[in-house]
Length: 462
Image 1 (tube, rainbow, N blue to C red):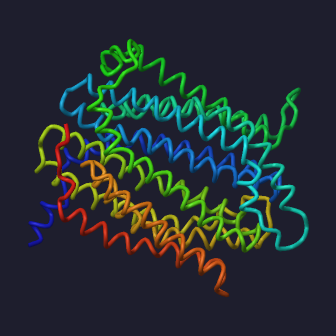
Image 2 (image 1 turned 180 degrees about the horizontal axis):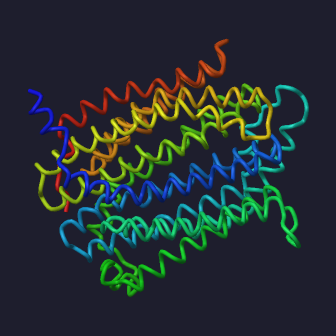
Image 3 (image 1 turned 120 degrees about the vertical axis):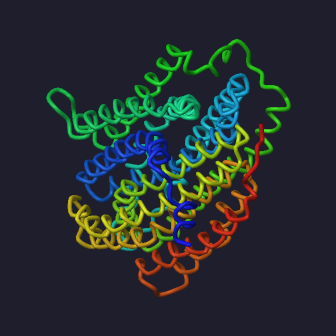
């Protein structure tokens, strides 16, 4: 019995070597990115609660955009990983074109929305419970930050189109290096532009935004130049710009399979920001505490997020090559490994996470809230790892309608109503509300288990 379980859920050294060679560059890339985001957050936090809150709210809005871009590229990535696994480079090229069109369309619509409705969107998260006028100050900081951040949306969109295609070929090192250079630039510019240095004036939140925008242009430039300089490794670029078309059958297939996935990412992100808006009615202190906790939690969450992303690449390649048995075997082992890693990470987060809020220049009340939110996130993390792995398993086989129900529909039917009711109509403290809302993840674990076990995702699509 134990031997059977070991064979089913634990791989050999070669398996983990392949898995980790793919995952580690992605984990390191996101670790550095989130670390710089953390340092950026601390620097803005030194300016006071209102600047930190204004920036945090705008970042919530940009989070929805980021997930929309992720959904746009993921729609084509389902096919891209399988095309590459099959050796169909022309099909891989068409999926790349789709990514460019989709991400630039999403970006144009987002910029239009921010220009016309930016103030109204930021104001949704500002509730003045003290009558001090702090919310108006936070709004002005938010608008200042948003105006500059919009300039960085275009390079981000193009970079994601290139980087995801490069990763589908198994080359995760170059996007990682580009990210390292960008975040290093961001970190240096953050300090110089936020606080001023020599002849450079102190720009505050505008400096933080400007540093991020410059870094995004640098990252995109590195990835694009490398990809075109190494076309033998990126064969999907052959003829990519010698035409604009995508075969009708392939375009239709990507839309049918991919649109639910793209819609899912947008609705899920919108759902999460709606949950934050529900929390925000408890005061500006809650938004500030959540901002600190979320920034720190993201440093720890990258393990299960990137291990989950690797599942879609590895399993997608097996499915594309018609190796269905190997796909199921690899999936079992990767899910178990992801959950195990996150149990270890969650323990570390519980032990050291509470020290981070003390770095911020804010009130003791906000620091205490942040510490509690971090502890709750650590407790829930292993369950998130399993549901996240289940999501990417289902996605790798093109079951995008199932993932749509599993992810965004669940968020809007269960998570958002729970947050709304608990925050508006109960006398529970905000930490208790946060815990109960986070605990809804256990329902997803049960659903994910049965969906993965059913093998409904074991499908070769190309």
